[in-house]
Length: 263
Image 1 (spheres, one colour):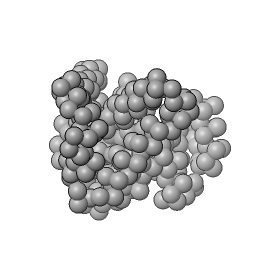
Image 2 (cartoon, rainbow, N blue to C red):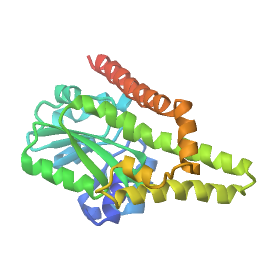
Image 3 (cartoon, rainbow, N blue to C red):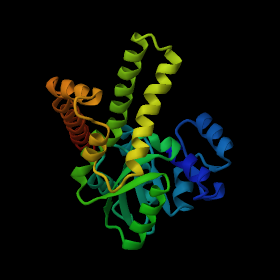
């Protein structure tokens, strides 16, 4: 939630006076509100009565309690956007049946620098509202509309957890460079820039497939090919897919647990 608020203000999508926030910790709320010059209130009731778009940015295990708190103050003008992983729209709808529309958004940590991936699932949402929400989150990275809520699990495994996987690959790369006597600071720079530069090249080459981009740097009998063959023999692709599936499966378990908790 803080990443999104900070991003929207940095990109001047919203003005500070258009944002009001509440938080369980009043100390954290005051500090954050002061930093970004946004409005803050201790009361969820006040926020609900003075806002049309409500963004729920709590931890998944805390969301049901918040839904209970705001339920009496929800009306058919409210657009509810939930950032909580694992909490399905059916659970939100159960507590907020009067809401105009319910939107579930799964983001990853690069959202902090407006380079996030946002998987968005809409429930009972008009076309104009969909367009506005897609435009809003696209300004903070890449926004993808999901046709099926089950696809949220793929976003969690492939983008949210995926960011962690990329950091792990970078860490391994950095560690190997250090063992080759590259100073630690330079090793980090090399690892980060290699990933960043490759990603930017891919982003700026939309007409080329990822296979084609890989092949462009893979000459016959060259160093890249030797490395790729070694990785293939070690089963890198299978291992990576296994990790993606494990993260996605874990998201399903969390979702089931939270669904049972709300009964």
